[in-house]
Image 1: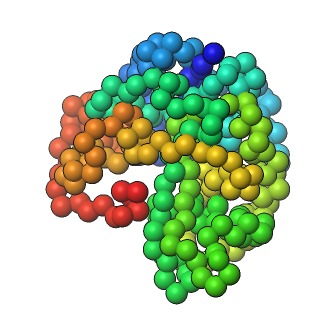
Image 2: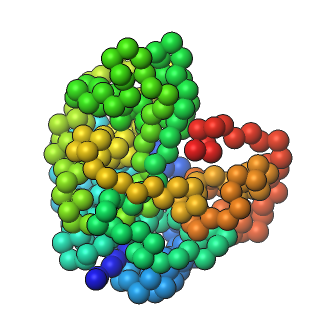
Amino acid sequence: MSNLIFSLLIKFDIENDNGPCDPMCSSLYFKFKDIFLQDKIDYANKCEADFILVENNDYFDNVWLPEMKEKFPYVSVFDIIQYYKIRLMGLFAEKYDNVLFMDFDVVYGTKTPPNIFKTFDFSKGIVIRRKTYDKFADHQYTVAPNSRKAHISNFLCNVNGIIYNYDGESYNNFIYNYNTGLVGITKQYYESLNFFDHLEKNIPKLHIIEFENNYDLTKNTIRYSNEAMFTYCVLKEGLFTQNLGLEWNCDINPMIIKEHKTIKDWYFLHLSDKQYILDLISGTSDRDYSGVKLSDEELS
């Protein structure tokens, strides 16, 4: 059984891109590249898996990026990079039995992770974290900023006739989306996603729709999210998934976790708070997280 762990680190013009990537990411990822990289190499060795870091190359710079910009000129380079990681899953799955993708800003947590290839049987479903968002009010979504991607995936399901949270009279009490910061997949499940077929059909729909202002879905990071599309593909194709949960893909600031005693230990930290890790690496952390409240959505 052949296993691969891979990550992605692409340089692009962050400051002039209409995407979610803060300029801090550039200085953080590239200045401390070796620190972020070592955890992934170490973990691959523990799992007796190959490791590949994909960086800028002729294919991405001269083929993938120009072709995607020609098809979708309104989509940010950041989002095009996110689509690229999905494509790489498929390319690597041609060679390896099991493929695990890790965002470059995924690092070790507080507890040594077990071998994910032995913990999960990748042949039984896509290995990924499902984030659930609660609360509906008068048949209208109460959409917090961190649940907007779920709203997009729900829109795609509704517009394409896959009403996964509507029973004919009222909405059920949750919507969700999958976080693609940590994804385990096989060739069979990658092909079953039909990700790029659905992408080409649905990105134009997302481009022309006028979402309500209170959803704040104008930014490319939300409107054209790879995670919203991934979620839609899973639902559209009726695919099995295996939930990693917060323990494997923890995207809450560790100081807030300690304040709220949310989870005792976690295997991997997905650095949604870039300032936290920059402070930690540079030894300048002086932020006070006491009194910060987490919503039920963030804890799910």
